[in-house]
Length: 119
Image 1: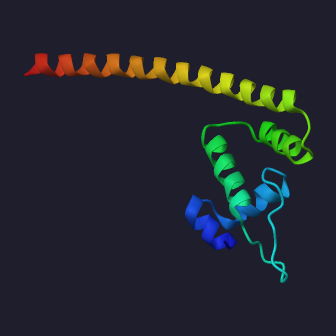
Image 2: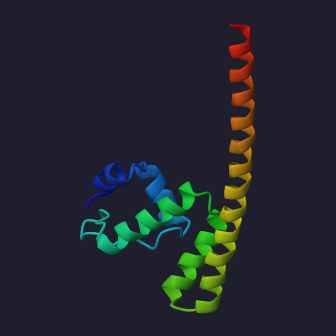
């Protein structure tokens, strides 16, 4: 797939894809003889994984380290720990968001009651 096709498929700009590759967030993408990026299934799998992780708020630095360890085929324990640490961060964020939603629900109900009393 071309960078344009991947960009459209995953709703990521071509510039972002190039940036992710340049900083090591995704492994180097295979290229055709003319130098054009040619995203195969493995490259698309990395794009999908990174997009998912970034959308969830996983830190770029942690992902760069993870990808680097994956490419070197080393650091199984560290790779696992990176994922465990990021999962814990997301779990804490989820709890905070749940608490915030409960607070908003309470406020919304309060306003509904006030509005009913006005009528």
